[in-house]
Length: 287
Image 1 (cartoon, one colour):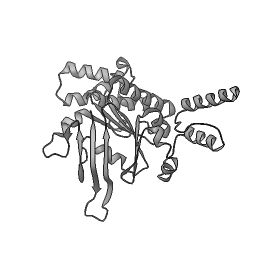
Image 2 (cartoon, rainbow, N blue to C red):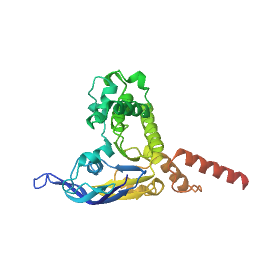
Image 3 (cartoon, rainbow, N blue to C red):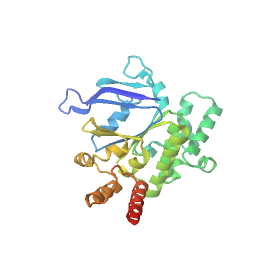
Image 4 (cartoon, rainbow, N blue to C red):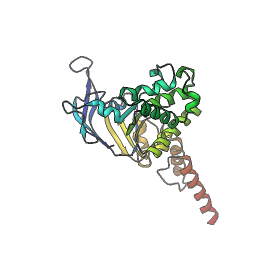
């Protein structure tokens, strides 16, 4: 499922003393099956942008086309889009409310009016997709679970709707390193196995570097940079001027180049750095 955004503006509190441009002439395209990393400093417009992608917010100007359907067209049925574009807000576990995990995950598909057996099948599949044992957690209260498990249950609730696009706003916020790695691993697995389109909002440059096919960098409501992580992270001075960083390994290899080591640009992961250093060492031995 593809998403096309054209000349999108969003202004909060129009006509008041607090009138604020949150988005300015934003144009971008997300292709079917892509894994997009959306980054930007606080207040850059990331959250406002993703809330337009399933119709939670209406644009002040411009249009959003999801799988050929223009969300700005009068009379468009946004519920149809929201079934296909799943949005996981930051700290989604705060939205858990049912007595058991099974009932919480079932809430969405039940509201679609699906048959009981279909709902049951979707719930079991969604819970297992996020790496939880269905039989172990189905009768538990969501509030008895760990932070990472609650986060997975919340994501399962969105997955049970069978979305074709999954948008996650800081899905690892507040989790310990183990919980963060588990959630990111499950997201990557979902993308690979179900071939769904993923848009991941994150402040962690390391996470984004490892996971995304393409980055979109927001700054002051505009798209400032766009491209593969290997290309975007070569603009380290620009990113730092926006209040963003680059992966630590990118900083390290830049420092090595400045000291005269023949290390290629565009290194963004530890694995890439390891290969480059080993190649450099082998080259010295053969000299």
